[in-house]
Amino acid sequence: MDGKLQIIIWGGSNSMAVDGPVILALAALTGSVVGACSSMAATFIGQRLHARWTRIGAELEEREKLYGKFVEEAVPMFVDAIQRSAMDPAKIMRLYAIVARIRLTSTERVLRAAEEVGKELLEAYERPPEDPAEVLARYAHGEDDIDPFREFTEACRQERAKALQHI
Image (cartoon, rainbow, N blue to C red; front, side, top):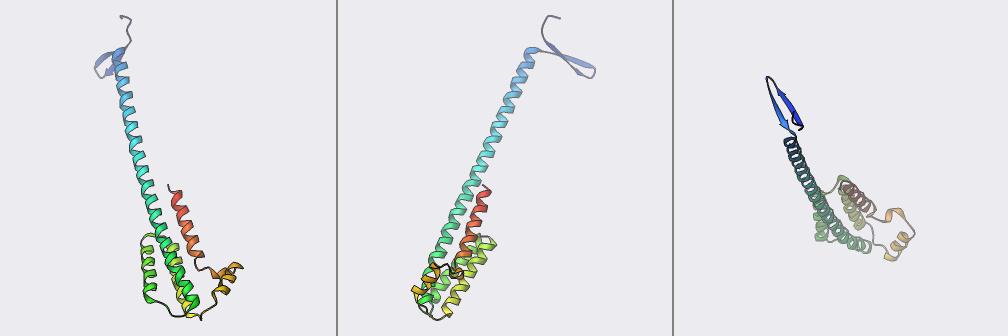
């Protein structure tokens, strides 16, 4: 033996001696391949997570705009319902068009709460006109059933929190 590290690989009836420098070269090559694969896998996973976060963020933003539009359309109609019994069918249909869009993207709870707001609005128009100051006073004193948006906004908030947990 000449003092070099040799490994003998047994392959059946034939054996082969591999020198130390060859082993080191193979180890370096294997390390490079593993490192490159790890880097590619990390990049791929990172890009997928980033794309998912971006998509969920955009969906949340779109839902928030939709829910805000729903509330902005419904509030003046409730004020109108307090003051008079005649409703504008075009306004009601615009509100129900928003409910239809909510149906496309939202959870069941948010949808049911939006539909309930619509029902409460129709019921408000069926009641005789009230003094807006009296209604505001009841609201200020914490009358529970005076806020027609409580369940809707709670459902929206919980839907958002649940979506953020998945990010």
